[in-house]
Image 1 (cartoon, rainbow, N blue to C red):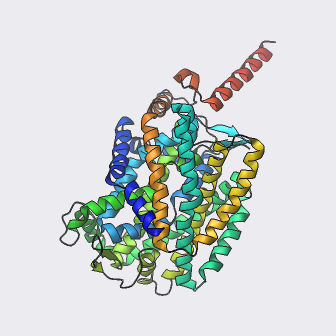
Image 2: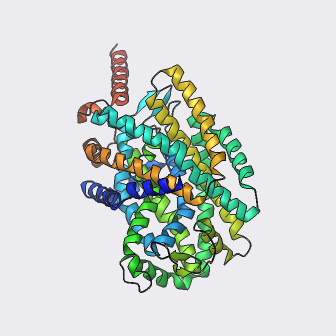
Image 3: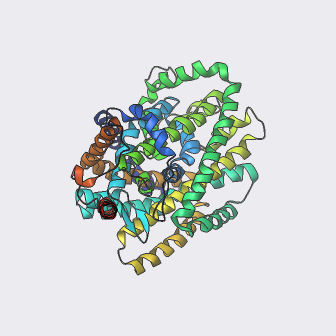
Amino acid sequence: MADFVTWLNGIIWSPPLVILALAAGIYFSIMTRFLQLRHLRGMWDHLFTHDRSSQGLSSFQAFALAVSGRVGTGNIAGVATAIALGGPGALFWMWVIAFVGAGSAYVEATLAQIYKREIDGEFRGGPSYYIEHGLGVKWFAILFSVAMLLATGLFLPGVQANSIVAATETAFSIPPLWMGGVLAVLMALIIFGGVHRIGRTAQFIVPVMAVGYVLVALVVIAFHITEIPAIFSLIFRSAFAADATFGGLIGMAVSWGVKRGIYSNEAGQGTAPMAAATAVVDHPAKQGLVQAFSVYFDTWLVCSATGFMILMSGLYNVEIPGGGGYLVENLPGVEIGPGYTQSAVDSVMPGFGSAFVAIALFFFAFTTMMAYYYYAETNIAYLIKNPAVRKVAILATRFVFLGIIVYSSTRTAATAWAMGDVGVGLTAWLNFIAILLLRKPALECLKDYERQRAAGQEPVYSPTALGHHNATYWVELEASEADDTAVEEASAAG
């Protein structure tokens, strides 16, 4: 099984996917005239709008739900993996894919808003919905939904659970199966409460965990403050094959930087749009900008914090491609993963690093599993149209998901990561193709948003004015508001 997963992972994550991710991000950045720079103020402003309803979440809750999926093991163990297999230059390519990926994140989130639907009293949306209703290719939508269900319901939770178990076993000697059981019980308390409980939990945990983690990282960095110029030099030299030690790793640096970048920030992967669709906003572009900002939050802030701690402490290994030894071996016998970050913190605060990283990883990965469950449920809602059958299927999905958490706690890290990469790569392939084909409505939304802002108006979306078909929720909302206006005018005239 492990050999097959490794082989499949190599096929899916071949150079064409790396090229596709970079090319799509660059294309969308150019087509939006680098909205990731021009609209930084708008991203921040729309993040804190408080509109919400029984159907959906506020922009910040939807942001927190998306960040829950983004900020996970990829920010701790994933960065360590990128450095171990691609050298310090991999961190630079993570930054690059985050910058250009913000353009992809805007497009997919905006499309999710345009084509979202209300199902069982809740907003649902994402790639399956915009593929069917935007592209009009239902078989493609079903294929994506099945792939996403496999990825978020089976493959990806294993990576998170496995990383939590590994870190807590190292720090507190807790048996893996016991930790898996605790995770399953805690997760059950949240996912059985539906999207609003998931959103409220994410809204509370995400800011606290991110701020706490970055503050500890700043302490570690402060102890190595004089090394900052040398570390930046190492990162850039390694990224462009100009370093004597890591010069031969440029291909691996790009590959692992992009792979771990997409795994962490999810730009273009197709998961975050499902969170974006839950937001209650009056223009799709607003949530598109908020989701673009979440890519920065994930990679430029949290991943960078991890990368700097590891590189500044010097406590990491870099493997020779294809095996056969190490270019750098400063942590003999330490498996690739959270152990690198734990060692980095311990180097400054002895005895604190293992426990702190284990706790941070617990919250990072736990909230990511929360988001993964919601994504799996969203695709069940898409695939099963009958309300009664759908209700039973969602209940069954919850129990299967909890079982996967317990099972994954006993798997090897290598298998867990490989299966996670298969899930990410498969959905990324399908979603990048979809958003490139369906780019027009998202780009039109941005122009419409900018036009209204330039005129001093609060942007409000009109699918009729833009000629967007099958934007059912928005068409019904527009008609309802028109009726309300007509009633008010008639009442005033009377």
